[in-house]
Image 1 (cartoon, rainbow, N blue to C red):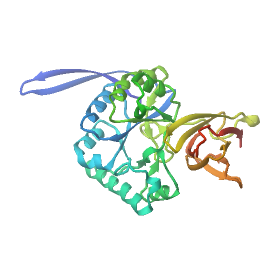
Image 2: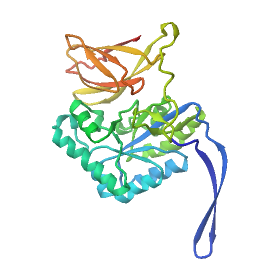
Image 3: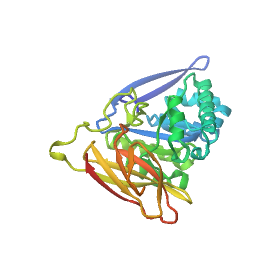
Image 4: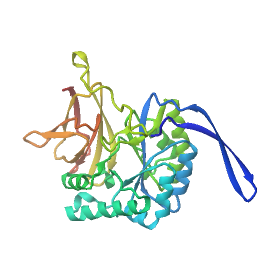
Length: 328
C-alpha cells in the first residue's frame, strides 16, 4: 500500500560534526499492475520485536497496517510513533485482547475507546480500522465499532504464525494473496519478521504491491486510497460463472473460522449448509439470511469485496459445512 514504491539506493557520508547526509537515486518504479494486498501485524507494539519488524519492512520497501493492543500502545508510545514515522498505518485491536463477543456493550465500548485514545495520544490521529481479537464479531461489537467510526477488518489469508508456522510456511501463505486481500500476521514472532524479505520478493514477482486497507471497504487499495481491488461490479454477460473457494481460519476447542472467496462474478449468492449439530455463530464481510431450520445460510455481497467469513460452533462435528455458489 504504497504509491508506486520507489526502490532507493542510498549513499551515506559522514560530515564534520557527525552530520549524516543521505543522497538517494530513484530507480525503476514498482510495478503494481497485479494489484494491492494488505499486510497486517497484530498484537504490537512490543519492545523486543517491533523495531526489528519495522526495519525489515522499510528496508524491503513495504508498508503495513499495525493492529495495536491498547495496553501495549499506552506502555510503548515511542514505538507507536516509530510505526507512524516508518509509514505504517495503525489500527485498533482492543485494549486487552479479550473475547469481545462474550462481553456486554459497555465493556466493548471501553476496550475500543481506550485504545483509540492511547493511539491518538501517541500519533495525534485516532485509528479508522479495527481488528477484533480472534476474528470474533457479532452485532453488538459492530454497533460499537460504528459509533466510534471504525471499520472492521478480518482477513482473507491466515499466516498461522501464531500456530507455530515456519518462515517458509508464512511466505507460502502470503503467496496466496490476491488483489484486494488481507493477510493476518503478528508483531512478536521472529519467524514472521524473517519472512518479510521473501514476501516482498514474491509480491514483486507477481507485480503486486503492499497497500493500505480502505476504511470504506475494508479491502486493500493503493496507498493513496485509489485503485481497483475487484473487477467491475456488473455481472458478466450471459450469466457468467461462480466459484466459491473455502479456506481455514483460526480454530479453538469449541469453534472454527472459515473464509469463502468467490471468483467469476461480483454478483453472487453463496449457500452454506452446516452439518448438524453445528451452528454458525458469527459472520463478516457479507449479508446473511437463514432458512427456517437455521442450518442453511445464504450469503450475499455487502460491499466488502468477494471474500466473507463465518464462525462455526462445531458441537462435536469438525466437518466443514458444504458451500455452493450461483450468480445473483
